[in-house]
Length: 246
Ligand code: NAP
Image 1 (spheres, rainbow, N blue to C red):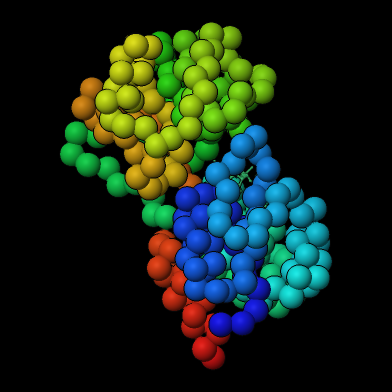
Image 2 (image 1 turned 90 degrees about the horizontal axis):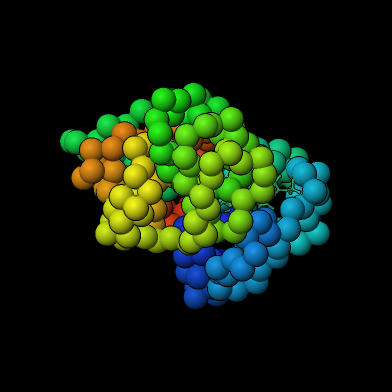
């Protein structure tokens, strides 16, 4: 393989892909947004911070001789995903979306799917103790809640927050026992999460199922039209190998 691959990261899949490419001797640069104070760094070269919109990303791609981009950002990082589409089209560089599949309900689950964080805030009206695991961005949608609210995030969330908020700073993965204990300690009666998918943060769903708690699940944004998408690191590797063999 020749040419430089840009991996838009911030996820476990992005770290694993970067690690495998480095091990295979493929020149790769991983990009992180810089949101988390002490991020888990992928192997290989890493750059941190925004590019300055699609124009900035397009300029970066040209300057760094990039021959392929894998957008392995979180399923809800829709702004970066849209920028990647615009920039790669402008420069004529192939783009792949790598995102893990969403979660699937199992018998015993009481999931209430909603289309947005605002809709999630409406869906928890009437509950008395809400566990918000939607990440520290977007919490403003819940600021008007009067229920007790447990917020869990990696770094401290910024205001506005619901009036009766308790913040727990923690980074997954969590075990089902840990999730059950947290939910019971705070007498949680509804869990709110994004449909992030993956095993790292799924334990809360198992704990909710076992305890008979409803889960408000925010649906992920769609993959942009015309962008090939895969769900696993192995498929992303195969897509990259295919591009270099042509
Ligand atoms: P976003 O709203 O889609 O992106 C906002 C802006 O942040 C982008 O326009 C870009 O700035 C910058 N950015 C985002 N991802 C970047 C990356 N990998 N490298 C360089 N710049 C990046 O993104 P977000 O939802 O805030 O997520 C930020 C990061 O956290 C992503 O890398 C994502 O993978 C990770 N993450 C997000 C979530 C979530 O729930 N959204 C959860 C876990 C991890 P410029 O326009 O200046 O280039």
